[in-house]
Length: 369
Image (cartoon, rainbow, N blue to C red; front, top):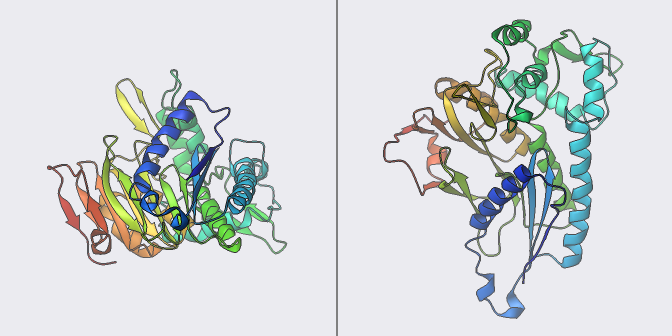
């Protein structure tokens, strides 16, 4: 028997809709389970637990563990994700918000230890991605108000407001640590928002915690972005990749031990204004939502890197993604462009199984990265 526990109290209607979508994805992920067909003595239990954080539902699936192990793990991960949400979000009264206040005033800031890895790694990833991954554009993100995307009165900012921020060109290179270990900012337009990295980094930390607890078969799935360890009984974890233009599953991929699969799509948060659609993935160079990509999926062993790369490659688009992927060390990439054509690396083509590809789509293979 499987025991499933969900922490859903207090969720909005929108949040519950997200939960239902993730639940469907998880049903696909575990659809091939045959443990129920085994004799009772050979069955292994699967336990699941869900946490609403980072604006999405995080589902934790543990396989082949005892109830006591599962309960202990869920309690610890709940506390950790609550901490991450409080102190890594740019919209709560937490450590990142306090740090941003100091950076905006160009005041040298003492950085809490738990934030240093996000900043230091982001400095490297931003450089590698040619600044397509740019967590300093928090002011631009706030200007577009995609955190209010379901409200009726939302509208795009003015061209003048956008251009004023773009002209200041905030980048991670505006930040440095001084000899006393304080973070120094030289650009008042900098406002940190780790929305394209924090979720992946948090998942990586919690996967490692599960390993230290002796749990060797698990999935942490945050709204379709996930990391796995071990496998599901006698088979590997198999996950579905959403079609960017409908609610169907486009393809499936078998995920190996210690791998992460992250997808960025223009369907995740968007709104219409005067019959034009605006989505939440912004190009730091223009200040506007990108127009060249529908979705991108990457596979890598580092969940934080996979998270950042998914955003960076989405923004780089169908012409520049290959160079950026090479710079970031990403071998497994599938990009669906604005016309529905599917761009892939040969390594990804070997792993993807299409279930619902549009007959008008072309598959365009890159050189091996």
